[in-house]
Length: 198
Image: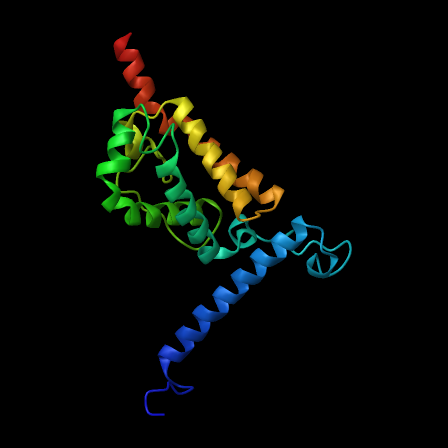
């Protein structure tokens, strides 16, 4: 066949690398799910040996493809959330989730980079509205005036999303802790508004 890539064709190696990454991610997700259901066949390869002991959270989550899948699902679920999504009592959130959805693919991309960066992956997150730190979120969320209750609703969506993907307890806890660590930044616009109202 004329159009089939040869062994020296660069597109072949890129394809094989992508395919291998996807298969590895699928195996990790399957292993995580099996571990959650106590399958000894897919548990740690040797008793007493923890293969994830030296791995970053990024690696333990399954890398960029697994993170992107979780972020994709999570982002869609936030839109549906009654407290923080399209039916939110917060007019800024309601508007974003109804009139700005054309921006959602870009937001998913940015969220994926942010999670990959904060979890120790090889990707660099560069904010569109930089905060006080490299991964700071206060300026990106200021105009949305997200309340602590709305933030907690999104944390609930994240928790349910991690359960949906059978993320193990250790990794789930670390992801939720990383998310919670930015609560004051994300809710800064709301707190500033409350102070002005006085």
